[in-house]
Image (tube, rainbow over all chains, first blue to last red; front, top):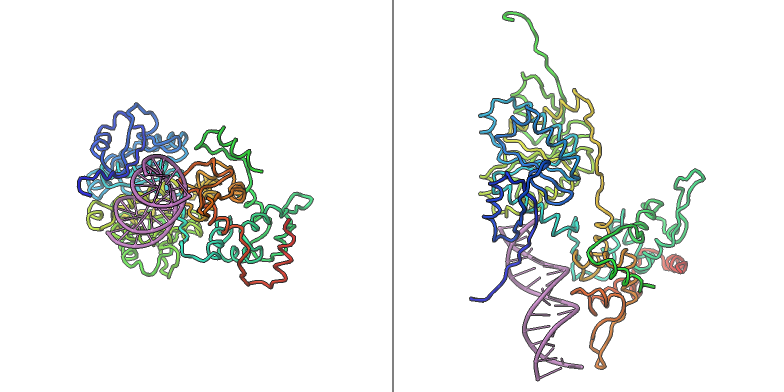
Amino acid sequence: MAGGVKTKKIDYVKGIIDDREHELMRMFDKRRGGSVVMEYESRRLDIADIVISDKIGIERKGGPDLPSSITDNRLPDQLSRLKEVYEVPILMIEGLNAQVFKETGVNIHSIYGYLAKLACKREISVFLTVDLEHTAIAIERLAYREQIKKTSSVIARSCPKKATLMEQRVFLIEGLLNCGDKTAKILIDMLGTPANVIKAIEQTKVLYTSTGREKGIEGILKQVRIRGIGPQFILQNKKLLFSQEISPNIVSKLTKQKVQKTLI
Amino acid sequence: MAGGVKTKKIDYVKGIIDDREHELMRMFDKRRGGSVVMEYESRRLDIADIVISDKIGIERKGGPDLPSSITDNRLPDQLSRLKEVYEVPILMIEGLNAQVFKETGVNIHSIYGYLAKLACKREISVFLTVDLEHTAIAIERLAYREQIKKTSSVIARSCPKKATLMEQRVFLIEGLLNCGDKTAKILIDMLGTPANVIKAIEQTKVLYTSTGREKGIEGILKQVRIRGIGPQFILQNKKLLFSQEISPNIVSKLTKQKVQKTLI
DNA sequence: CTGTAATCTTTATGA
DNA sequence: TCATAAAGATTACAG
């Protein structure tokens, strides 16, 4: 191992930083060498301080600067523009501590009142960091999540390799919408295999009243009388399993079409 | 003004506080006399630490406690319950400072990684305070806003999106054997829908050498050239999806056969 | 949640 | 065809 060229894995993320944010850029430079490195582009930005993707725009606000920027209405203005442009607008507050409140003569109530408003309206995500370095780390993490990790990984679905076949099947079917282990177990048990469960969902029809409201279901799954399997279950999972309406884009469209065409 | 009985205007707000939050209650007691006084009720709460209305539930987390509660999955659990019950779930982080990070052995990246996730998903509001007193102030402000001011407080429920359809699909396909988020994402992307992935697995054959060793695969998935999809992947998942060789027994065999027979 | 190490699978290469 | 090594992905575990 000694002398070996054991290469550590490095992920590169991109971002655009307002050209006035000198310290932040220096900090990113300094942090090169970590497991995630930020390859930023410096540019004059009107709306945000840092942009990570089309969706995510960040307004960075130093703790000492926060109170005054609230009272003179600068921050609310910036944020209202931010939220109009970015789907995920983030206010990043850096280094807010007791000291800050001591020094500024601003009424504490106005500051927390404003933060309370943000929390209630839920239009902006508030992100707090301790100091400049942590701000950089936080931005790296946001970029990593947005650019590298992408797939939700909402719950890391690690099905133990040593599980029985039945357990693995239940686990798979649990991935359906509105389906916990209980429902999954019964479905597998009734229909035999996961493939049959899929097929059953495909072949089950939703019945409507004359006014267009869902009335019930018709088909195989009607006979499986368990709570939780009704029109909603069928509709949602049909969409999940079969709907073609989405346009993903990792691979070239041509290759994709070629591959999909070979499916019978 | 001197000697006059000019009564200061006082607003009274109400809240329910978990009976284990002693310091917080003491702090509210101490603050009586301010322009907003909290008339709290102490009660054992299961899912929040402070409740301000049927809409707003607050989970209070001390800075020093934050890192560990993330790594052992306590916080994610608490928050997921919180957001199920309250329309406006709030995580209140108190006294997060440099000291805190020094003391815990937890990786900084983990903490900001989790906060980044919260910010991106926008399911809960994060509220930061400097210390206990400020936590009390913040809660007063929230309550004031909700109970007294009332104006337009309630959220626009902007993006209720729990997860995108794509994420749900990846989640489902991850249930296959030897399939993590990477492989799942590519499969969905290539084949369009989960149903197509299943179909593709069904239609892919495993090739053997004359001596009976697995040589490769033939079919649609051959064209999806990614590491991780070979004979093993096909064999294991075919068994998972299609093999009928198992006999579970929740339901009577007769019913089961009747149901399965109706599948085309 | 992140980092790292261990394990497994496919793929490329050489005999 | 077999054997081995390299590359990539997933799983398990610790902090």
